[in-house]
Amino acid sequence: QQQDGSVVVTGVMGDILTLLHDLTNFTYRCEVVKDHGWGTLLSTGWSGMIGEVVRDEADIAVAALDITEQRESAVDFLLGFIYAKYQLVMRRPSSSDVVWRAYTKQFEGRAWAAAGMVVMLAIMVTVMVVYCSRRRGIHLTLSDTLITVTAFLVGQG
Image (cartoon, rainbow, N blue to C red; front, side):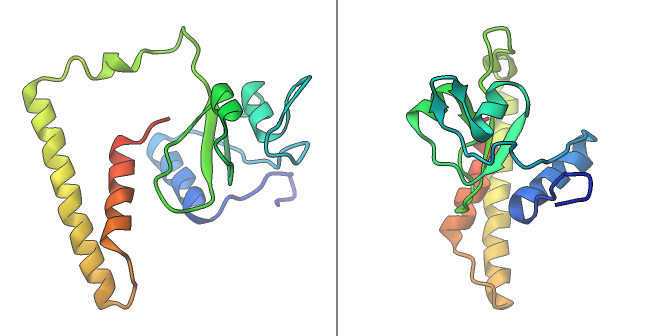
């Protein structure tokens, strides 16, 4: 925890936040949840991280959260892309938010072919990374690495 009350997120999720910040130049500040809770539905509303996202006090939550039916009805969870204990949680979009189909219905055959080529290239790079990591004594499994690449390519928010 920093002197100003903010927290530094480390590990994979910290790296992802830093990368997104560098790529998109958005600003963010990570804080400890005020009530130190994960998120429970009470008679007065949601507590914890889920409550802060629902009440628009936070845009996302980074934590080891179980996806329950109640929580999933309140917020969207990022599809797990690694075997880790962290999840990204964000406010469920309202009906006034953008319709995601608008981003894909304009794709022509060439665009889908290009997307397929990107997937194939990602698989080839993944195989090379696994092979090179084994030569350096790092034991990555091909299946875990392919699942990670697939999640990055088709992840949901």
